[in-house]
Length: 193
Image (cartoon, rainbow, N blue to C red; front, side):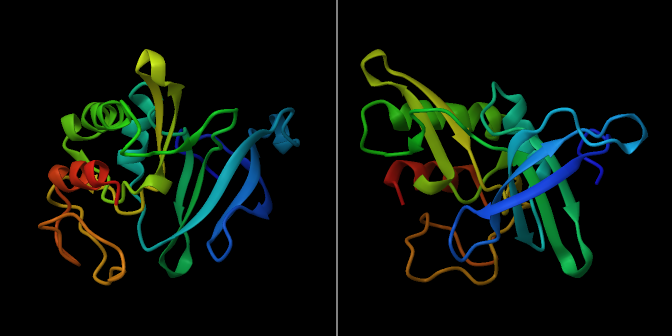
């Protein structure tokens, strides 16, 4: 497989991470000269996304002070699926975003603006499960990692899926099949939807 940098990658898939989803633990490495097995393997997440993946937004967020795990590859497969390989967020203390926790909304919204919105990009699905935080609340310092860039892309150009879960609350002004706006990202974060 060829990664985002154009270099060859070796991949080992492991156990499912989320029941009922196409998301797996795995390992990624760079093959040695002559195609030898990699000397070192790094933990990764392997995901199959349906029809699209916002690789440009994911890469931009990763470049912005590590606001997303490194994207190793996003490869379109036959049938329209996208194979996504990214760094696995490991280490103690990472937890889903909580809009009611002191300082988290300010920290996460600042990261989203700097990593995506200032570059003309949107995420589109910033539910708590797609935002990990780790920090020292007493010092008002939070590390942030954004996940799941399936719908991400250029603001006003990237669109929500035509069919959305009607049981889930959505940002005011957003619509199935409609464009994703920066205000939608911030509203979802603010409300903790």
